[in-house]
Image 1 (cartoon, each protein chain N blue to C red):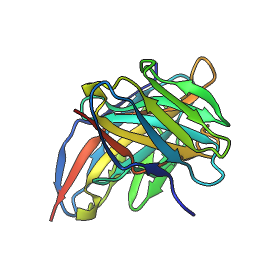
Image 2 (image 1 turned 180 degrees about the vertical axis):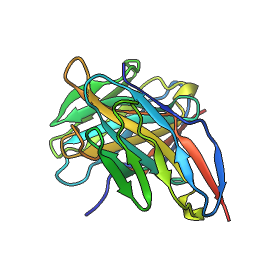
Image 3 (image 1 turned 60 degrees about the vertical axis):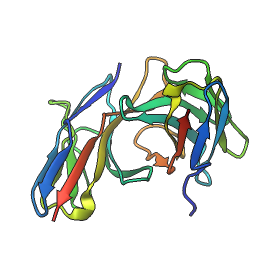
Length: 115
Length: 114
């Protein structure tokens, strides 16, 4: 079945540091890939997405490129801020053998940015 | 445009009881999905409804059920509650629930079973 493997957390960085959160996936067909962010006490918010190979999703300084050859969708940001502290989830949507679609999530990576 | 609304936000129930959670999707969205979030298992897909029909189902026991109404609002029911059902239950809506369309999440209902 489909699966998403994320970098284990927690991750702690200093403000203005470079961020990479690794995400690899296993899926049949050609899934759409997403990064969601969850702030304390909140639901999930879509951060960025990519729907086909070599697409680059970007938002709020975060970027991720859909790499089909390495089945990866790593999240990067050049200079993190304290306000980026949250839990980040990598997810994919693919079609099952029965033609149904669902989102499959990674386990989440907790990011803490220190001033 | 109003977001996804889940009620109640917090709930405490006793083992063996049943509970009903509600989700109002964004206006015009026809797909509603439910997820269970726990520290140990992460986010797990429960089921998805589209136009009042269950279109997809995760690997949860039959104690977990749901339905969708003609206005796309959805309810999730858990019967014979167990301690392990304590979790944050998240609802997500999207226009079609397919392809690259974004799923918008509510703030969740935190269920505690004692």
